[in-house]
Length: 419
Image (cartoon, rainbow, N blue to C red; front, side, top):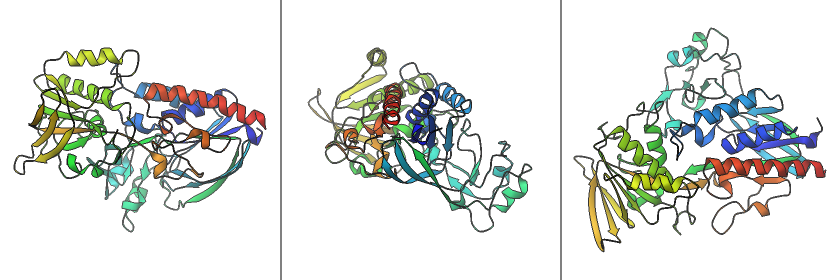
């Protein structure tokens, strides 16, 4: 295939997967570069989509199957883009491939993990539990292949894994390597990170065990999460019967993220439903500035939850969160706008609806990035032939991200055909 008929997709989340698959099915060759040892991005960490509350794995499985069945798609995991040079239709790309220490002979038998003597913090579950240093990222990981975290292995730690594997799948001689590619277009699909809650001092984030983020709750509610789907307090494993959600935690704030993160309100409404379904006697309180429910059916979703007498909506800015040293209960102090005064309410646990922060702020993409005054990627300022998709340009849900990725494929086709 001509070099300029190839597309580099940086990021293997839902936007990147869609871009790569649609480009390949349109006749181009696509390379997916993903820094994690698996594809799927943030969607893989979600328990259920709003508004239908269906699991996301069904959608991911379809994309994974399309990739497996299409020889025009090549994927590189544990990979980073070192540099992108050249011009539209003729880009030179250098990739750094980090060692996995597990090759394609892996059958996912778990023998290496059982033999592994070391543990690591489970970043897939936001550090709420641990895995062995030899691990499968999550139950439906794609590629379905184990990985060894060399950073958490002391000297000779990997030898038990090597001896336990019956399939010669452990390769301790793997080293970082650099490869070069030539492509005609580049798509930035690196997605988003939850805003660092340690920066939210007045909300007790990072200091109190029972103040967590919305994505942490998503993992707690997941059957493959750290508690097998049981929503309990991190401090003592107690069932959560009285919970608060604090909206706009970092979003719409000149000191943090200037923009609205779009999905947070709907995510908290969904989480309220998780709570009410798991604990029918639970009480939920949502502290908000404004409730935003964009989409065709999402407003109905909002009214369904608002009609629940055990869910209370309080309009007001949270001024602070404190912790009882003995019980680890947390107290929220908030200005109640409609009540015309400040109130203090105590809860078992508080969930911060942290916003969406661009991954390009802290990871390599091999090219210069310009940002809008709000801190989002300025797509118009990117080099010709390089396109940003999904949440890089504007906070978005899964459906909008997929639509945007499909649109980017049309731009890629135009780029390679102009050459």
